[in-house]
Length: 388
Image 1 (cartoon, rainbow, N blue to C red):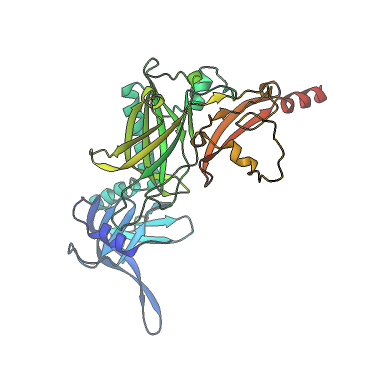
Image 2: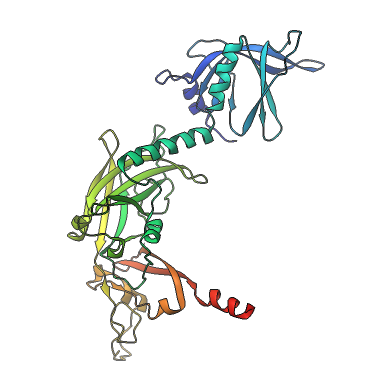
């Protein structure tokens, strides 16, 4: 595994936070000799912080650790009782890892061994993660809210299916600037999570999420957010936008940077808004810019698929016509952004998922992409008929 030596040294010696457990343990270590290798148990001063077990030669606060054991994906195996004292220690146990490796550890007293066993069993990431989720659920339950309720589950509860032809209340594009770096000057990996609180229903929804922008203090997110009246939203609904720093992309482990709250009615009344992101302590950690568009329904009486109606072009050899893509750029070119017409999509397809994106263009505006994915109704009908 890869690690930063300086960060580990800081974790092992930082006195600002109390260690989970400290004390003397006997660790079996390999000794290199001229003719052979031997393993002996040596007395070490150990400190447990999270799932990292550091061991030192002395108990001096600022001494560098001799090594660290990552207490992850391992199980504990107690030594069988023996009538004769063991050279590895009187009260021993082994940390057996999934790969087959094992580390023998021993304590001086039975009480000390039991305390170390309890601390090690509670130090794994899975245990800490389960405890965190349990506390979050208890907190949200006391508030009267479901912590796992997202917009998809909310639609299922209301027996509502998303209509891709529905005109949203507004669509917003998000970006951040001046996000704080960490203690080593590294920029964050930001992602925005959008929650919506509906006062009439007294419910908090996980409404949308942007993509992760790696190593950027000034990210511009491509995913946009469309607020829909069919979800029960109105001008009184409260929107909370929270910025997270994704530390581990595989497990999506993230730490909150800051958040901002605003009503949906305020968003509808403005075209652009720049608000500060506040941390849990009230300090400003960056700024959030919100660009708001009010879409119009596309006029499908004309055969044009562009955002602007088709026109009869006058052919003039002396003129050089621009690329047709520039005709579909949004309102910066003084043209209203239209919702694409989906025709009779719902007759043949079900369970649609709608996502919109905005890409910056050097043509004077942004390029809007409207993505619709759905399931074919025929896939569930034809096989049953054939089998019957």
